[in-house]
Length: 226
Ligand code: ATP
Image 1 (cartoon, protein in one colour):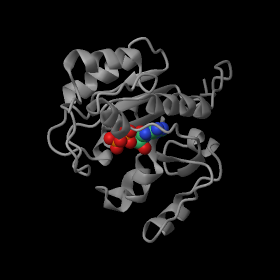
Image 2: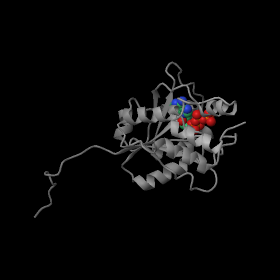
Image 3: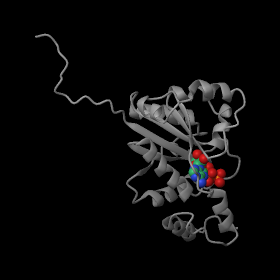
Image 4: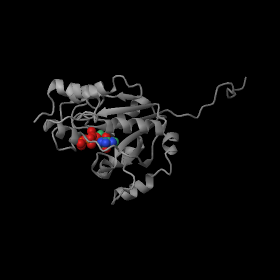
């Protein structure tokens, strides 16, 4: 019998989409969480992961211990069916490179899944200082988020690289496993971890900027006090 394609099988061109946001999350706040949920919905992603970094070699300021930042994220996401906590960078020795994270995610997810790394515009502008930065799109896509009205002010060599990899629409990130950069005008909430640490060290409350469970954890452990 000659081999024929099985037309009874449902033909699906749907590719799984996994997006993630890395960061120090010191502490996690509603800016991170709201952005993650909005992007998960915009991308119609199957998963959205928050990946706390272990040893942030490119951030000079001191950060809380990895297990503390992990526990705060765990409290924030405990009852959330939409967002996932991924601890792969915490288990890695030495400096954290996004390139290695993408390699490890690609190993886990296989070559067909669309893998989307979300970065803030400020981080994107420093891309040429990242390890193997020009190879990042060989492993996944980059989704840049920034405030509406502020255009990307790119300089070389990032400018040419961006033009060469720019996606015309978000859909291209869904329909390809890797290869594109998309600049999404999304409104970030005006919240930063720096602001929250500042409030706490001044003896003021960051309530309504971070989840209640995270604030309880911070208070219980006396974090960020002057
Ligand atoms: P810090 O104030 O300590 O620099 P942060 O609040 O900027 O911290 P990070 O942990 O450095 O938080 O950021 C993790 C990721 O979340 C980065 O990609 C960053 O661009 C993004 N991010 C930070 N704040 C917001 C926000 N308010 N809305 C959306 N995304 C944010």
